[in-house]
Image (tube, rainbow, N blue to C red; front, side):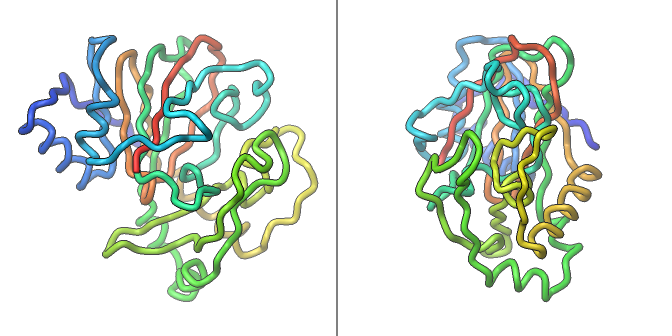
Length: 249
C-alpha cells in the first residue's frame, strides 16, 4: 500500500489548470487539499478534465453519507469495505472521471479511498486472457440487491484500449456476487462466470498489494480517471463522515 501526498493550495488560473491537467495525464489522479470550505471543487474538476457533469442515478451531486439501512452493505452509504471497481459499469457510457469532495472526514481514521492503475494488473495476464477480456461482451446490470435494475444495464467488453490507455470496466462485487452492494456476512447463492470470477480474485489480490490509500482531509478534492483507475474504500465507524461525488464525461 502506498500513501499519497496532496497538492496544496489549488488555484484556478490558466497556468495552474494546465499543470493539474499534466498531473492528471501522468498520474491518472489528483488529490488536492485546501483550507477553504467554499472552494469551487466542481468548477475545478470541470476545468481540469475539460468535461461537463453527468447525471448519476438522476442527480448531479451524490452525497456519500452513512445511512442506517446500508450499514451492513458493501456500499458507499454503508460502513463496510468496498471492493475494487470502476464506477457505473452498468451505464452504456460510464463517466470518464470521478471527483470527491470531503466535507467531513471520518474521525475514526477509516474510510480511506484507495486507487490502483489497472495497467500493472494487465501485465500479469496472458495474451490469451487479455484477448478474451477484449472479445467477450459481458452484461452489467444487477437484478438483485438494493441496486437491482437501477439502470437498463449495459453490454460491453471488460477491457478495451484508447490508444495505449486501457479502459477497464469491472466490479469485483458484481462479478463475484451478482450484486453491486452485497452484505459480506449474508451472501446470497450465486454462480459467477468461472473465468471472470478467477480474474476478479486475481485482480483483488493485485489491488491489495498495489493500491494507493488516501485519507481525505476536510475540504479536499480527489479526482481520478475512471477508465483506467479502479477504486475502493476501507471500513469506517464514524456515521458523520460526509463526502460529495460527481461524474464527469
